[in-house]
Amino acid sequence: MTAVDTGPPPLAPVEPRRRAASSKGRFLVVCVLLAAAVALVLYKGLLSSLNYFDTVDQALDHRAQIGTTSIRLEGVVVPGTVRSTGSGALFSISGDDGRAVSVTFVGSPPELFKPDIPVVVVGSFTTATSDDFDSNQILVKHSASYIAQYPSRVRAPNGSTR
Amino acid sequence: MTRRHLDRALGPIALVLVALTVWLGLWVTPPDETQGNFVRLLYLHPALAWVALYLAFGLAALSSALYLWPRTRSQRWDLLAASTVEVGVVFLTLTLATGMLWGRPVWGVWWTWDARLTSTALLELLFVGYLAMRRVPADPHVRARRCAVLALLAGLDVPIVHYSVQWWNGLHQTDSVLVGGFHFAIHGSMLWTLLLSFIAMTVVFVWMVRRRYEIAVTESALADAALEDAVLERRKEGVR
Image (cartoon, rainbow over all chains, first blue to last red; front, side, top):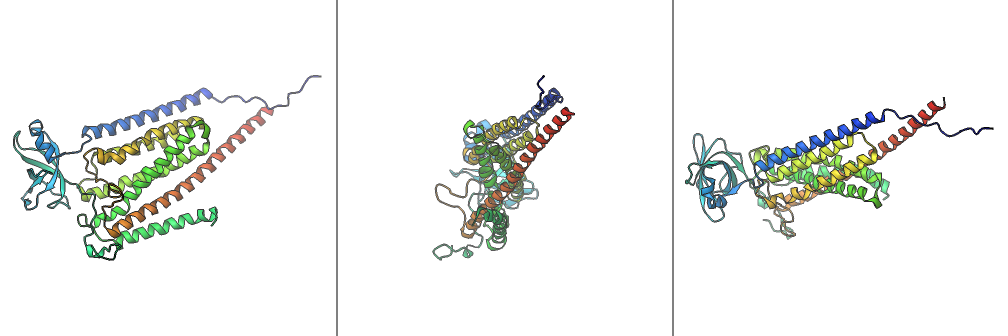
């Protein structure tokens, strides 16, 4: 008497190599696309440098090296220096130690542009030795402080208004 | 209150908190001295970023690490990581979108490649890549391992995003909350509304992740059942 095999029949594989190759290919495609996207973002970020701007103090300290190359310059708009021109505005920006740069701006300033706020101006010094700056873009760099426009509406925990 | 009741109440609680934030943010809080009414994005943008960066991707990195650690390895950690990344990508996309909406009138540009924005865009790409990786057909354990490694690598960008405004000169503002200890650079009702928005978005996140995780567990169980059915069918075919 012969023994009867009652276990489940063996399963035949269904194109295992093709499937594996397809899966591996898609995995590689995702890896390559991801690496390319990361490289592009890093390139864009590093191209414009990790330090987005030079402060007025930094720029004036390295004035000779900068020459007339295009830079982003950060400083506070000096009150009383803003004048409108037909094509833009004239104003000065200053650094922490009080040194200032005169800016000739061509274009439309951002809505929030006004004296006594930090701004970043994009452009270059007019000559290799001048402290006058030509700009065609102003970026307003708002501070981290948020102060109510109508302070009387804000009540402190002790009941006083500030 | 049982866990089931709490689970059911989570959605309505999130809705009420969001509605309260909208009411305070749009009608009760004053305009800002410099930014005027643009400041109202303060009650949305930072809360979205908080959820995306620290909750979603933090949780994704933690659950991925727990998956990779042999003693704690479980498919549930992989499913939790996938769910949090999916929800986190939604929050991070909204963070970038609201940041652009805020940047245009305040800075004067929609987008610029400063360190904070660049590192955040990088994070978005890495986690979108994570989602793409999950769609690549593979053995569930192989896929889980690949994704866990990618989540941990992407998570390395989170501290870079956080400290970018301190490490480098950038256009993006520095911290307004917990500046140098327990100090806030925001006036009264604006601060409370901001803190409420953080709580509201956190509850929304918890609700979304819970729902997404339940779906992921169900999908996984269905896939297992479908595989078992397919094996049984094949065996029947073999018997015939």
